[in-house]
Length: 197
Image 1 (tube, helix red, strand yellow):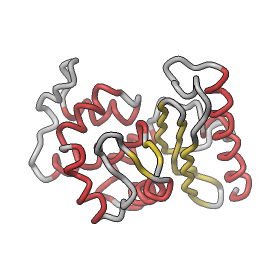
Image 2 (tube, rainbow, N blue to C red):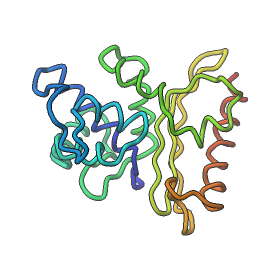
Image 3 (tube, rainbow, N blue to C red):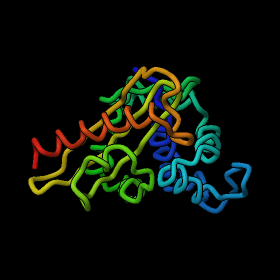
C-alpha cells in the first residue's frame, strides 16, 4: 500500500455516481466545494482535471473511511479513504478493468478518457494513442494508471511510484524532481505499449 494521492478520487467518483443512479444524490445539488459547483460538476472535475476541492467535497459526501468496508467487499482490499488515503497498484488496476468492462461504470470511463492531466503515461505513447487514465501526486509520490488501447487490444497499466526524494512530487509546481519521476512513468508505459502493440 502507498499513499493514493489523487487516485482516491476514482473510488469517490464511483460511489457518488452509484448514489446518483440509486436516487440517493442529485447531480444538481450543491457539492459544498467552496466554489458553488454541483455534485455532477464535481464528479467531472475531480476526474478530468483532478480538482482537489471537489475531491475533498466528494470524500466528505461519501463518508471517508466509512466507505472502506464496502470497498473491501468489492475487492479493493488495500484501499482506504481514511486519512491518509492509501491504495495499491493491484486495486487501481482492478478498478480500471471494471471501469473498462462494466456498463454501470461507462460514465466514469468516459471521464477518464477525457483526462486533461497528461504529463505521465501519455507522454511515452505514440501521439494519438487512446488512453483512459488518472494521475496522482503528493510529496514523495507520483502515480498514473490507465487503460491504453493498442492495435492488439487494451492493456491496463498502474504505476504507483515512490518514495521519491524531495522536492518531488508536486505537479502544481513542477521542477526537475517531477520531470525525473514523470519521465520514469512515461518510459514504463511505453515499454508496456511496445511489448503489447
